[in-house]
Length: 202
Image (cartoon, rainbow, N blue to C red; front, side):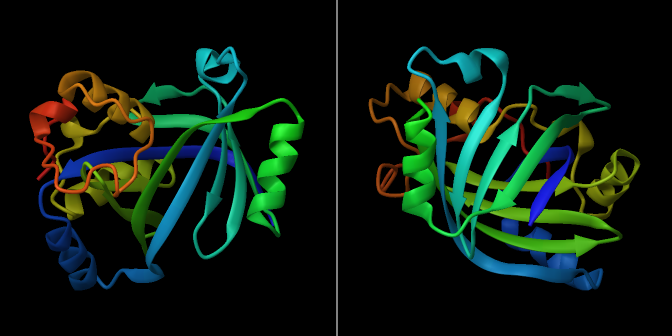
């Protein structure tokens, strides 16, 4: 199935992800997808053409396998707004080889655990990453801020940066030399909020 539309979302750093989930349950939010491990591969040319243009080419494996293309976006009233094309593929390794045959290479791998809920027509993603926990809210722009308020999240703390950009910031601040955002690489490390350069939304 192909999804071709605009991705409009806001991302928040949270200290207590469980508290957000308990709030969702109290609001009778619908569980869309239980906690699932994700592996994501970002592709680019050898000269970084996609990154330079603000575009993303990603292959994701969780409970299915999806190929995603995102155009450069803009900030609209605190939310990130950009065109997205996404569709399912049958085989992860074959899809990777196909993309590489077109001249792209894997430039970044990141993983996370994600739980997805739906409330009032908006998707709420609870993300556990190696350097911290986040909430992403995705849907119509006029619905995002009210949902954030219902969840007790400070809208002014919305993060414009991608997970990849946050990783680059952490590596620079902490002097990390590895290139992938994996739980193995961050095993035993404690990343402080100051290292991420964000403010908590709770």
